[in-house]
Image (cartoon, rainbow, N blue to C red):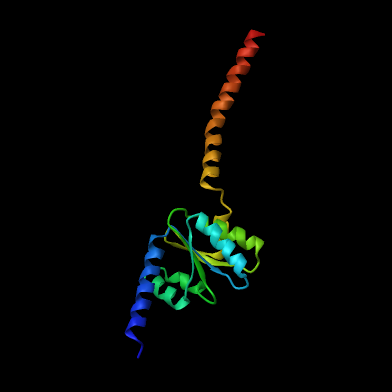
Length: 165
């Protein structure tokens, strides 16, 4: 029979993982096999700067947490060594940082994740990482909104110059 303290510890860990899965705007699952200590330290530093929590977790505990969080579709990627990045603030940050790091380090493999409560596969996570940042999207929107006014102003100026001549 298992020790009661061990069972309580595991139940607390599952509860903590469940809370993180529910509260995170984005969760990205990755296979970190083959990364050396310096590479993992650099990855953790980049994630920490973006306010993203990065943990290596036991698959069995994560499976129990996904069942409690009603995200059982994520279980298919929980095989082998698993590291999970949780972000409460930015839904794109963990995907972007991990995908960029994976481009430079072939050992890191994206497995999938959860974004705003929806389970994504590895390809969808990579596509999310390729999206421009929020600031980039806002600047694109602003330029699209300014274009009609700019074109109108140029047309008025051209008409005024033609009438002067």
